[in-house]
Image 1 (cartoon, rainbow, N blue to C red):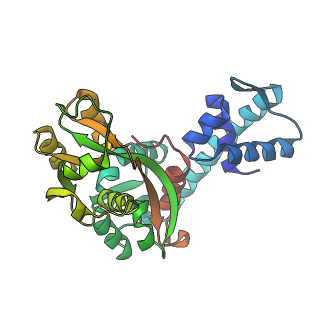
Image 2 (image 1 turned 90 degrees about the vertical axis):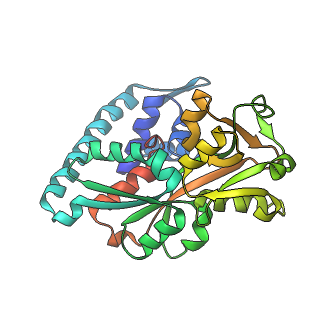
Image 3 (image 1 turned 60 degrees about the horizontal axis):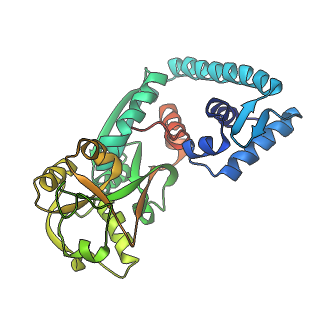
Length: 302
């Protein structure tokens, strides 16, 4: 029995569903079921009432839940006490993040982390993936959140899955796009395209996706490149072309109708984000806690 299993058990008890907990924690449902079976084997009894509509705690589960919450609470208190005794360096954390994730998803994760560990000073550096990778290499950040499309450049680092998002085509909210949910690859190739700059993780993910179709950016009607997601959104809103953005970066604009989002029919694109660091031994206690947070709690991001 370990802390991770107790956290998993409490999450299932909270959402009353193995599948919902699996989705929130970015785990497969079989993996979740296997962990619960291990917990039930440890205590020698079933802990849940199972039905087609979900799960609820039985009397034994209620007892375990009561003590699990207290154990986790005490463990957090222990970590805070230890943190107060260790050196000042362990109270600082330098985090690097690629532009889309760092600007739109990670701020909530940092806020959530600060709520749990208010004594830790967190500094966030945002840039394109190439820049953040250089900062990680030069020890100017302790860890980095990057698109998994850069995984071939992270072979010498420890990596852990953090989150995932959809890549969407964004268009001005007018015809011929406003009534469309999808766009064909052939249509997208002909449309004026505003692209992120070389070194961007979003661009890298898109290039890898179209390469699976035997295409490169040379096959598209790229009009200009920009290093700012906000500048791209403004240019698309003004009607000058289409672009590719992560869903989290355009969520507010989609809801307010400023831009219109579509998926590419032939290649719906998913982008995964990894937390990368040189090695766990080199991380201070704040860094280790941050990796545990972003790697184990799917609802930690905006």
